[in-house]
Length: 187
Image: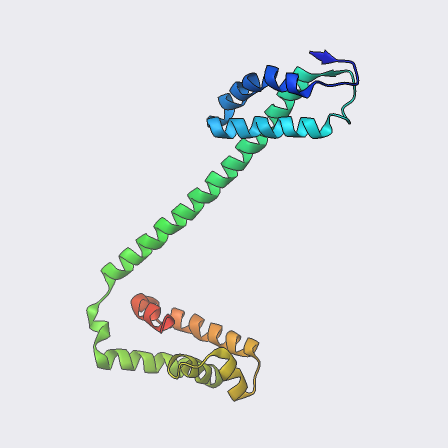
């Protein structure tokens, strides 16, 4: 249907083409609901632009082209979304696997009181003095970063940086004792 007049009978076009357009979209997007949303969006866009469309216009070609483009955008979005979901699921699987192996390799002997105290003492003593002091105030005294910053007359950013250094050093030194590191991290 090619319209040459200035008057476009939107209701008649909608009634004539909606079901055809929906079936066309559904062939590609598979979901009835998604197909209907795409066709509704195309008709809404058509209604809003009806005054701006150059006449004469081939309505059928316009609608099919618009729906084809919306389906392409929809499918492109779904592909990207699925890739992100797959990547997150793979990262989650790897995290679970790492924790599983870590617990499997855990030597319960490391939690004997003297051994843990010696190990922690050794690691804590390897930290730079200021870093160690900030870490101990945070973890042993339970102070917030703001409190530590005020008490030591330093910025909160410095406290955060020093805590990051401490965690990095602890993570490196306690890599064979992963559960112990996790325990300290959440202490």
